Every structure is written in C-alpha cells, then in structure tokens.
Length: 91
Image (cartoon, rainbow, N blue to C red; front, side, top):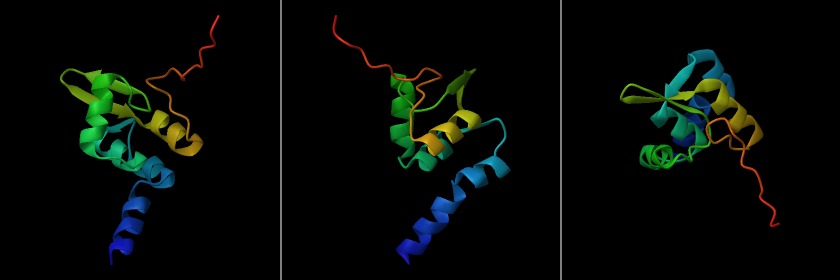
C-alpha cells in the first residue's frame, strides 16, 4: 500500500503534470516535494540561497519559478537562483 502512495505522489509531481497544472510559479512546499525533500528542508535551502532552482521573493511570500523547476527536474543540474554552480580552479 505504501508503494502505491509513492507512485501517486510521484505522478503528482512529474514534469508533464507540473507543465499541465502549474502557472508561472509554484509553492516552495510543492517544489520541494517534486525535488524529493521536505517542506522544512526546502525553506532552509531558500533561506541559505541554495534552493536548486530560481526563487522569487514577492512581498513576504516566496515562489519557485516553474520553468526553472522543470529544467532542474529534467536535467538534474541545480540552477541556484539562475546561476549554475561554477567549479573554481586554484590559481
């Protein structure tokens, strides 16, 4: 029974479903679940500026850009608010 619940949860946050049902932004909670971590972890990453996709702060609210979330889900590469992590080489 637990496996069926996980399958339904996974389908709810599939890229196809997100494209069909989300607008331009989504909640941090939903984006966190789509990425496979908890709401608390998602907000912690937002506070630290390390959420894997682009985040908008609108007034007191925080929204995740849907297009950015989809790119992260499909590529597996974090965007960190629009900038890809760059590897530093020692000089």
